[in-house]
Length: 491
Image (cartoon, rainbow, N blue to C red; front, side, top):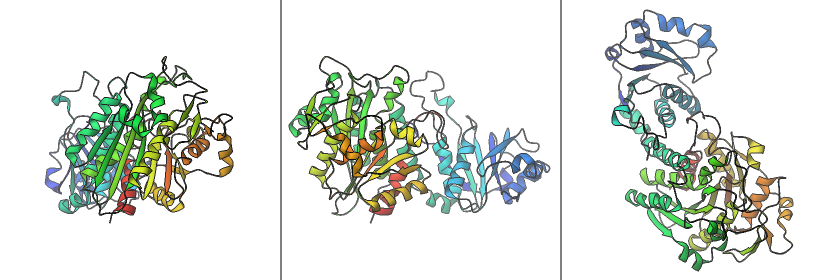
């Protein structure tokens, strides 16, 4: 697993700034005001920082952005990075500042002069989140000598800042775990390898149980098993439990884990199919959240359940026109074998309710291209049968700067699921595709269970780098769901 950068807080020492090697980051208020560390840097640089703060270039910067002053006079550093940030900056602005610092840092040591800025923990989190690289399959740059240098943040109250940032390491670790899983190629992250990585989290205090195909057959998970019939990789369901609360019913997180999706017999076009290694993004987020909760010892009961399958064309693969009976007992006509994620989730959602009787249930899936058409790569689609749960999540997502937007679940959209030969069909077509997919899932949720569906197809693996991640998997959802647990489910 990729280990998050160790970002340490150290006491502010103005006398040590001149000798700092590598890179130095310093903050300047939007009006050009220099704090105590910035004034020392300005003195060392013979007024260059003050001149930079008064320039048009600085005035044009967005809050949280910055630029370099290379090879500063009077300092050992190779560059001083000037960051525009107000003392009363929002969490989002402070994290963006941290990401700005991380993006160009390379392998040299980094000293961040935060001084008395109260948002130093948020700067540290943004820095850690952006300072990620997936190098598992690169033959160069993998040695210890190529590891990035240390990151230290100079502050006036290091003990207070370290306490305020105590959970940041666990949260970053959960995000990184999700990114590693989503970035991994399908020939490496098989269903068995995925289950093995989750089983290893027993060492963190999680209860982990792996259900193999004979057990799934006995449970009646026929729709999940139908998706994986064409693959040599066995289908599995992994149950992770964190029991940090009292006797209350758990929050349940359910993830779609299609390790590779060819589309099956309804095969996808070749262009872009390589990104279908990320079709297990929902399961990746659930796994990352469970890791974070265990590492920070959350005082809540949460169960994470992921369905792990591979959708391949084969002589035994399910076909368009097949009728399958779900664990619930409803029959489903398969119109399109590329609408497979909802078949996986149908059985896992029903199983979760039957076994755990959760206080609330949230599923995550890279489910539809339609949600990308509607929301692009900025926001995930949110569907819910419970306003309070949806509102709480949207608030958490906004707090953590993870884009989300609620879409309708009007019953008018449900009628398209009607089948001529079965209780329902698994695909309606292009119109309102994300909504009709959510309605399909809703049929496997009891009315008494507060439920939310997150379609993360657009945000799990966007085509461009994100604000807090390089190009590749983002780990979207780990922070928002951890915040939701902290605010709504921890006693």
